[in-house]
Length: 416
Image (cartoon, rainbow, N blue to C red):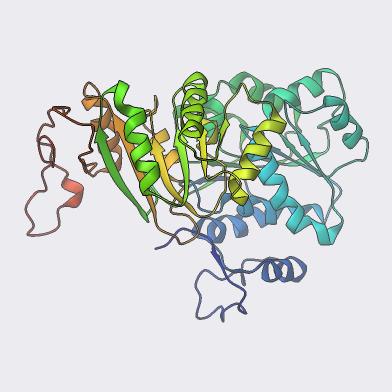
């Protein structure tokens, strides 16, 4: 089943024909009209599962891979619920970019209700945010650090929060926000509805669920580690000093938009500079860039001003840019599960995508970890810079690829 959001300008199908129709989920006509006007035809699986549960005011845990439409799965219930009472909603997200993206989705659904939102993130003027808070917004979208700052200054009050969303919860915990999240969970009323969305289910999230949620309903759309369906994979074994040469060859071969992931912010700067030296339009996103610089880079990448965007893992989740032709893992990720989040930036909205990864000869074990997560081998391709660069690839049996009466599928050794 395709897990991606389907958009069209056609009239929605008869709900009896379309099992993932937005009809029959309990959505009020005013929001359904907005959904139709926005051109959405069918709900994604996570939306189809989450929205009815959320509209019943139950606590909810949604486990789904990146790019499955999780944002609308909580935005639609939030707006509908707030239209029926005078409470507030708080949406916690890990990054500034994701906060701005969520706010765009909120604006689309909340506009007919004249419902205001406020984005509370670091890197932006706290004085401007305090001014917006005085306008009594109904929906607060915040990163944990800035929200704690405003709480300590007594500039924001969470006593009326009736809906709490933890979006990309595993990412927030990976980034070290657990202490801030604990403080925020203690600051909001206990009589609230909590929705938690995550790509994985680590023990820290289990702790949150058991400590701060009331009998949450859990829905898992795709098992943790499931990669995007329409993404093909390719691996280049290349010495570190030859990476830029190979990158130049690849960028000349592909003509569409390219997202390149590097491990460090310094590495990202160097790669972006090298790409520009080769004559390509490139931007960069990492923690040394200001919020305005990051917004400009992302918007320029989205509208085509920059064909190439180099980024650290800050862009691995939550950056919704349709039409990325290629993702390049210039450096393999430190956390193997980030491979899934990185490549999830391509192959979105029903389009096919491609992911190329660079591995140095000593990274055989790192590659094997990725293959174990994918339950499939990464096909190795030659490149003009290679000589004897390769690593031994021991025979590995992937029982997940074996059907009744079929032989086991073995990984090949060496270069294909």
